[in-house]
Length: 272
Ligand code: GRG
Image (cartoon, rainbow, N blue to C red):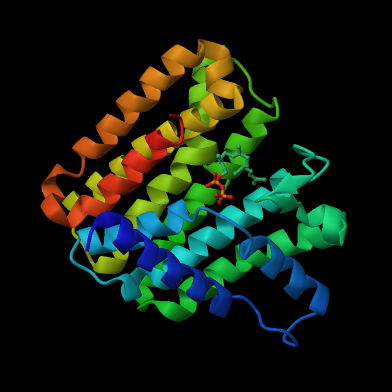
């Protein structure tokens, strides 16, 4: 099978597991269940969970070993999107091609749906993995999502930064807000496969560089952030360099990393 077909197949398995990992109707107040399902089951690219399952395969594991953790990461990502869209943050009306959660369910329910997704993520990890793996995966996802990761990056992005030059600040925001969760996505795949530290660290570096490239590409498409600060041309070059750096980390995995290579190439493809 070529990498694109493997990724299509993995994406279908992720969609299926996401659906099954969300609370069902009747298990919680209906409006919370509907709001959680509405945001997660929208049209997301699923790049983070794909990185997780393919990192697991690159280390010799099977997709099934990493599916639960991959869904947990997508839940954390979706929670961050719901909260980012709120009037107190970016105040966005649309997300994934349809009205944002707070436009449909109101602000209070959007906040609670985000909270419930964040906690569901850790429930899925706790129930789906061996205790030692669950513990390591929990620590990695929590660190990437918390104050030293995504939440801190968001705070910096909202203007709560001190003593940083503009360039340094943008790089820090991109690292914490976006790249840390990519790094965790790759590392968690390695953990689920039971990989040693050499492979796990190589994948973490792959995820971090790819996450930085992903954010710059996003800024090139939107014309904001990195592209606004440094100009589109430099932003494009830097995104290519970072994706190249990510690809170099895959050399030790040989053909087993062909789908991760395709994911990295797909990130650059978005800016063409
Ligand atoms: C509210 C704690 C908190 C954090 C918010 C993720 C985030 C931090 C904000 C979202 C806005 C933004 C531009 C984030 C940078 C990362 C990014 C490009 C997110 C969008 O990810 P995609 O393109 O989205 O993978 P889909 O919908 O495809 O999953």
